[in-house]
Structures are given as C-alpha cells and as structure tokens.
Image 1 (cartoon, rainbow, N blue to C red):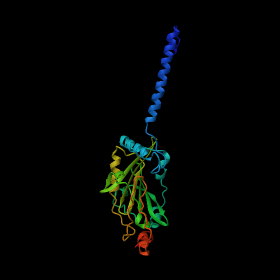
Image 2: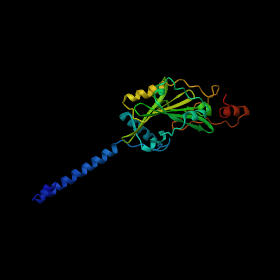
Image 3: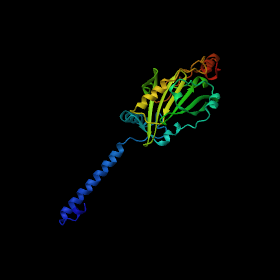
Image 4: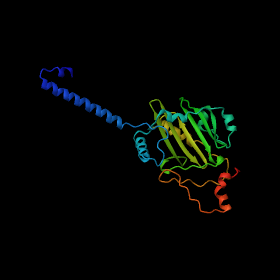
Length: 268
C-alpha cells in the first residue's frame, strides 16, 4: 500500500486509497459475518420452555448436533459432571435401594474411584459410582431408584432416538474449548433411571460404541419397592410444561386417598 500511496499522480493516489479502504472494509465484514455463523456456546440451562426464542434455540442446537455430532457449551456447563467421590462401601450402606451389581461387567475391569449417595427429600435414592478406564478417561455411572422415593419423570420420545437393550435412550455430547468434553448417555429401565458419562468427545469415534456397550452390560435392576403402585405418567404439553388434570369441584374421601396414595404409600 505504501508504494501505491506515493504515486506521483494524485488522481491515481486517491483511486488506490479508496480501493484499499474498500478492501479492508470488505475483509472486516467477512470476518464479522464468519464469526456470526460460528456455533454459539450454550451456557447454563438455556431458555425455559415457553419463553420467547425457546423453540428457535432448540432448533439451533439440533442443527449444530446434526452438523458436528456434538454441542459447544461453556466450561461451567460441565461442572455438574465432576463428582467428589467418597468411600463406596460407606455410601452404599446408606442407600434406600440396591444398586445394580457390576461384577462380571466391563466396569469390573476399571479402577474403582468410589461413590457418592444423594437424597431426594429424606430418602437416599441416588448413587454415583466413578471409574478410571485403562486409557485414563473417567467414566461415571449414576442410578436413581424412583420407587424408593416415589418420584416420577417423563421424557419426549423424539429426544430418545438411541436404544440400550431395546430401551429408549439419549446421547448428548458436549464440548467446551479444545480440551474439555463430556459424552452423556441416559435412559430409563422401569423405575430405575440411569446416566452414564465419560470425560471425552465420543462423536465419530470407536469410543461411542464402547459407551453403549458399557450401558448394555448392566444387569436388570431390582426396585426398592417391587409392589409399588406406579404414579401416573407425566404428559408434556406443547409449551414444554407438564399437563395437569384439572381437579373436580368435589372429591370423596376415597377419591382423595386414591389420588394421593402414591405419595403417602409405604415402601413394601
């Protein structure tokens, strides 16, 4: 540019100065446009169902996953997957249910890192177990026996395209920066809800099938309350919120007891 600006003819000088300014402006616009087209990090829990822009945000996330195989997230989004493990024997003794036995599964070949029990209300119905794989990756198995605490959950079948032993499942792969990632698999077997995750991006790698094989190796669970009357399925409306059946104007004592027996029932 300096050689052009020093041209003797002032008309040529002005001409090339304008060309140079236009080229720089065009390059700047291209950079801005390119930045706007890059995938955006998803931080926190995102927009709540029914909020303005919720559907558009969901569609952007789906398009990103279809294109890249994973979702870009903030590093803080992955913090919840970092579990502080304690003595597994002590944590298991405090549980209100029996976790699935891992002897004879692929988990028995990994280094045991411990466990952490978690309560729903006053019932310890959740358990995290951590393992280190031979390649150094950390894999975590989470179980929630909903029959132990009487809780319930519902998931959109369209969001569970995967299968684990024939049961609907969802795989979510999240990448934060270059070095931090979580591949999270979740599914429900009867009244037992599972999550299985590894601190790696398994999209498009043999590790993806390894994660599914680990999930499929789990034996059938035994519910804490085998004689439980299961709660009614939760129906999700188009706004993303549960649909509640309107209560009638009057209820008999028997009808009241029937409606709330799940909440107050003993675990037999």
